[in-house]
Amino acid sequence: MSRAARPYAEALFAIAAERGDREVAEWDERLSATVARLEASGLWQAAKNPTLPKDVRRAVLLRAAGENVPKEIASFLLLLVERRRVAELPEIARRFHELRRRRSGEVEAVVETAIPPDARLREELERAAVRLAGGEGRPLRLEVRHVPELVGGVRLAIGDRVYDASVAGRLERLRGAVSRG
Image 1 (cartoon, rainbow, N blue to C red):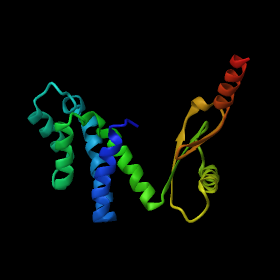
Image 2 (cartoon, helix red, strand yellow):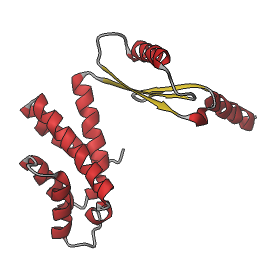
Image 3 (spheres, one colour):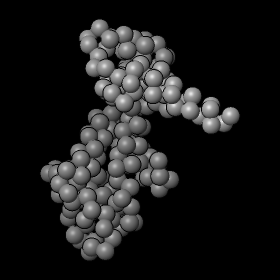
């Protein structure tokens, strides 16, 4: 994460958190949607281009934020233009989302498999993720991805921890061991 994005995300999150979980959720969704609209519309380059007039960049950001944007989000987006930090917006949105997950106690896990998982395998992967994430009782958001490049096996990421039991991971570790001699 960029060092510049962290304080912006944390300050905005603190304001939302003072207002309650509903605001945190709404602002999280609004930030993510704004980034998605900017990227999908092709206006991302214009929004972060410091050579364009500030009024143009402000208008692009506010349009991407959508109608009925909370005034705090609008002010925040305008602040990013003033401080030349618009390029940090995707990272700020990711950090805000991470802070929201932590506040709710939710654990996010990503499982990558070499073969498309059927329902039974998906259940097994979810049980393993719950066990490795610290047990029952904590909300778990599991994303399962099919990644043929793994060749075989599975890779599980829970927060910052990665458990790699894939063939590709084993080959990479073997390559490293051989090169170290």
